[in-house]
Amino acid sequence: DEFAIASYQKAIDATSAGKFANEIVPVEVSQGRGKPALVINSDEEPAKFNAEKLRKLRLAFPAADNSGTVTAGNASALSDGGAALVLVSGARLQQLIVAGTIDPSVHSIFRVAASGEAEQSPERFTTSPAPAVRKALSRATSGESDKEGAAVRDFVDYVELNEAFSVVGIANAKLLDFPMDRINVNGGAVGIGHPLGCSGARIIVALCTVLAQNDARRGAAGVCNGGGGASAVIIERI
Image (tube, rainbow, N blue to C red):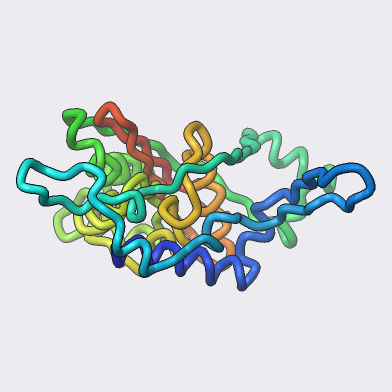
């Protein structure tokens, strides 16, 4: 529950500070004839947050002895959403710069340094992002991150993990031995939502935003799937 509360609070603080402004395309919703349209330009989920109600929710998947930790409150919220990315080759990027469409002094530019996939038995899907991130990082660093004594935190500035459940963030932070204050710094899926088919793109957009806002160079994004697998990507700001 405490992880979930922190996710909501980070999303609330980031919204108040305008940290999502460059990620969100405002949507006008008609209110009927003669009435001004309602403009949605911020995520609605964080505003619904109530810490006391969250702590009182019943278990979603209780064991035979009624033990467990997962509730509707510390899992990702039911939500709709969409995200879009534009990926171009290095050659095309140079063309856009020459044409003046992209100005490196104004626009942040990122590159996909490497990607990785990992899989375990289906019931262990929540911990699959960690090996996927390590595999992607190994490729991005030409194996340097695999050497004895190397730590993920020495090669990565920030991490974005899809919080399908709070345990995904908690477990993978431990498995990666990565500082919690550098994971999902503007909130995650528990506080923002987890629209199916959207989350992979959303966390990459979020990671790019975080790298730019914190003048950081490299980040990792990881997302698990229900079949026991996970995908990860290493993004570098250039």
